[in-house]
Image (cartoon, rainbow, N blue to C red; front, side, top):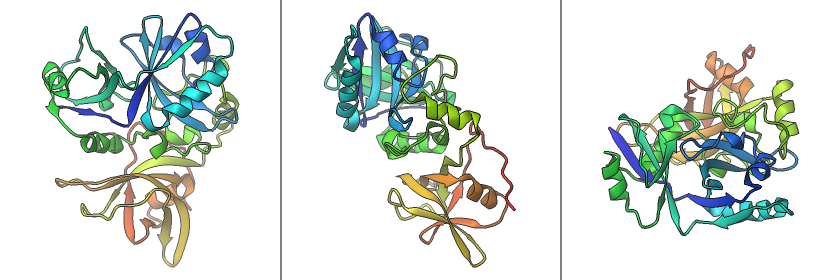
Length: 305
């Protein structure tokens, strides 16, 4: 079965003009030349120090690009893009009142449409497709076009959390997050060959020196009726009489219909290795949480002794 849901937390910017490609190429973590009208890319905009600022999906559009960004933080991104624009022949427009973002996922033939911008989610095939559609197009119309069942954002949120996909600043700490801790390498969000971009040095150094010490991991709670866990709550590894700090929580997604709740946790890899080896259990408060490491995630081997 296929599902479609609006993602109200995302909005659209347009970057166009003759310098749009070199302008973005020097600012984001991925290769913007790979973005076409049918194939989007996933990328991050970093601080000069290499820390996370924004995640962006970019799709080719006429003489430039459409950027799928966080609605609540798009004003901040617009301001930063204007700062770096300088004398570039680039036009930056907020199209948040003209377009909506939708997710389409589940089994079925590859969808296509001449009037609606639809493309595969560039992070994972299992994530489905992303849609940019005009405000005048009803979700019922989209569901009919793509033979999909209507779903709400909570259903999509559970789908992406099951896959272990971060949801922007809900999961990645602004001014603190490091791309390799949050799956950008495996989720096709970094180009290692394109050349320099803003904040590149920290990302490259983290890779080549093997400095990743934490990873954002989806964890399930033992009971379907689990109590919601607030962001930035401490997770501990309990073993016998010891309780060691193991990480902190980020987005929480309720379960239901037999599905357990999921919380995204930035875990210390040493603590995760101990838990996986049976040397303790992870808790947030008095609720036990169990990591579900997705198949796409590449973790280093760590001595759990």
